[in-house]
Length: 286
Image (tube, rainbow, N blue to C red; front, side, top):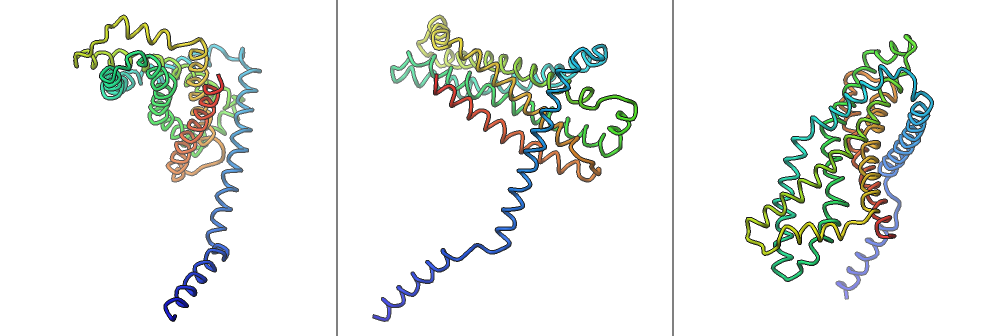
């Protein structure tokens, strides 16, 4: 009887603890976190609209200065990252694509090779892995450069000279990263597909090259090409806008540059994942 009443009291205590409000420190922390990200989201949206407005209204302004900057950003975010992307494409092809092709062949599902490759490599892994490489290597450098320039007063110096910092610093990075991520994604997908079949060939998989590439061609549709271009370019735009925003949004001290760099990387990664989820819904709707 005493044990039964003890259990009842224990259950009552547990229910009372669950029904009691959270400590004020937890609610304050969550509230501050939500307010911070809400303010950041509004500021980021305003910064993106400002960048779009400058891009549209000043497309023919100072082209002799801006176009070389765009080419430099394409080289920086695209051409210089090509060795790393090629290495990752080869590794992914050997580790994932090749084993997938070999497994499907063993279970007698060779006719699904093209569909699996398009769904996994073309639609998902290719754009995401490429965007991650550009984010870690070029996006980080962008935040550090712009944050340091803001901390040292170089942005105010540009404004004093009559130079629009968004037109001079942000627009070339947005265009350059969008083009670079799109081009790198195409190279990554091609490298992964070819290296994957090479791995399968080394394992003596009875799948002829003609059959392999024919299945890929049949699985691809024109929507895949359009959505791939939009997704990869969208990843580049997201990375460029967020990293530039974090570097230029407010006056900084040099000690704060590392903090905003980490914040920019996290925000860019989360936004790219959400954008990828949005495109996934579009794929499912087609």
